Image (cartoon, rainbow, N blue to C red):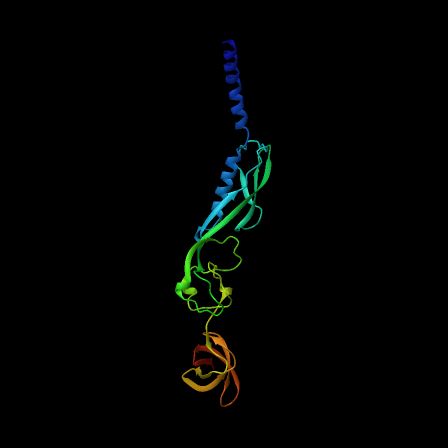
Length: 233
């Protein structure tokens, strides 16, 4: 009975000291929570959904409770997807400073292929689907709408599930080298039409060199359709 009484007295005396000691140490959980909240204010939610992971602190690290709000800032000028380093500090009478890492993933809707596509394939709507994907490590641009991809031509073979990038595509050839085309020259109030021979392939809206069938002079215009090149006088 005496032993039990002594144990109860021991815990009554020690417990407040234990709580008091913990109150003087900055909570690692609180630091990570504030770091996460800080990063949330920097990311642009309109780009997609971000997933933020904050590095765990070494449990042996004891930081004195900061009487002022903890200061958090990026080491770099701008936030980016992937790894970011944060400087976290307390500027009180007994200051401290630590650096922790964070990792930011970005998920957004992107256009991917539903099946393997051969080089030179004209893309149809059935070849595409919209899928929410992790684009954190993606090093090229992507499409988020099918309209930007349909009727384009693949420049190389694409595997099923490939995130389509502008570098994978080209416009379909509108005028081929050797084609006979109408050259239309427009100026204020009048229009001249003549025949010419395309000197190379061109897609719609691209510049193309054409040889005037009569004068044999090479001129440059814009491919309007499969039979017409427009030049501005």
